[in-house]
Each structure stands twice: as C-alpha cells, then as structure tokens.
Image (cartoon, rainbow, N blue to C red; front, side, top):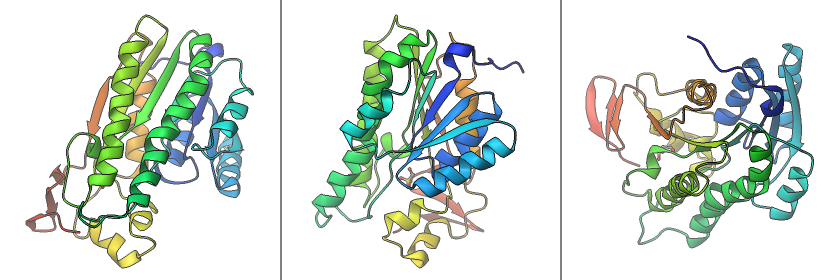
Amino acid sequence: MATAAPSAASRIAVVTGASSGIGAATARRLAAAGYRVVLTARRKDRIEAIAEEINAAGHSATAYRLDVTDRAAVDEFATAFKAVGVLVNNAGGALGLDPVATADPDDWRRMYETNVIGTLNLTQALLPKLVASGDGTVVVVSSTAGHGTYEGGAGYVAAKHGAHVLAETLRLEIVGRPVRVIEIAPGMVKTEEFALTRFGGDAERAAQVYEGVPDPLTADDVADTITWAVTRPSHVNVDLLVVRPRAQASHTKVHRESSQVHRES
Ligand code: 8X3
C-alpha cells in the first residue's frame, strides 16, 4: 500500500517523551519513514543514544533535552524551526491507582501538567510552524483512559480525557488550515516504564498489570499505528484510532491466561 512520503517542508517530526516506550519507538518508525526526527525528553543521555542509533541506521535524528511542562523552554525550543511537519505529543503517564476518596491531589496535578499542559505547550508553540510547513500533523497520544473510566484511575482518566478534548477541540478550531489533528488512544501496552512509574518503582505491582495477559501491545505496535496514521495522504485525517491488544475487550475485561478476570489493582 502506498504511503505519503513527506515533502521537504514537512520532513521534520518532533516526538516528545522519546526517551523510552512509545515515544522512542515512534521516533525510530518515523525516521525509517523518511522524517528528520527530533527526539525530546528530560533524560538527555537516553535520547542522545536513541538518536545515535537512528543515525547509525542511515536515518536522521537529533536529540533536544526538554521538559514539556516548562513553557519558557518549549518556546525557546520552537525558535529552532521555520517549519515542522509532525508533532507527536507523547509525553505523559500515570501516577498511582488510588480511589478518588484517598488519591493524592499532587499526583493529579502532575498528571494534568504532563498529559494536558505539556501537550498544550508544544501544540501552541509549534502550531505556527506546522501551518508554515503547508502540510502539518499534530498527533495526540491519549489512551483508552481518555474514553472511559475505571476504579482507581480517575486522576489519569481525567487527564487523558483532557488530552482527548484538546485534540477534538483543536480539530474544530483549525479546520481550513493545512494541519491534521490525529488522536491515537492505546489500551494495554507493556512498556518498560509505564506501570513502574505508576506504582512508584514497585516492580512486583507493575508486573501484575500484565500478568497472564497473552501479548499485550508493545511500544512498537503503537508506533506502527501512529506512523500509519501520519503517513496517510494529507487529505486523510484519522481523527481517532483506538488500539488494544486482542486480549483486552475493555478496561475491566481482560483475558488472562485461561480465565476471564476483572481488572484489579
Ligand atoms: C494506559 C491504559 O488501562 O492503564 O494508557 O489506563 S490504562
């Protein structure tokens, strides 16, 4: 099947949260698809190593240390570009799985900051450059948590609903300009860090999330989906794509080995 090769003006792709997981995998996939990828994250050593690996494979990547919640730093970053073709807002994540009655408000604030304000910062700063490319694409990596709730998830679910609303509203507001807004909403993805971060480094609790689940999605599965959506012809806007592993029918209905069990923390 034909894919849309990026034109010269739209060849730069910025990926946030590119130091691991879905962000790193997306940087690799977009580079292989012909984009000059700019990897951003707080951990400079990790994005530099991934950029080196991409360049060694004959593709093009650079690394730029960036905290998406630092607006002054984001604005400074944006001055580096005349035009940007693709912005993948991937930085974010979950903290805790506590019920509303006892959850830590600081966790909620931090999740809103990274998942929503971070996406807002990058999108605002780069929107003029995406328009200037003549063929821009904003990707918001939300989650199935942006489309339904589950016990213990409210802080993360609220933040991801915020990311979903940002994408949906932006699409309404900029229609007529040459920029697509694509939301990718992954379900259960087994990455090295998502669950570990959620549970404050508790590896045992993190492992339980995926216990017995045959083939949760990988970061590369989601990167493949993102890259597919981005490389459709310019007039094709994949508004919202929900992607789950076959073993997950909903947040609360996950197949684990031979039994159907309900999700528990
Ligand atoms: C991750 C999906 O089920 O942990 O965004 O909320 S879930």
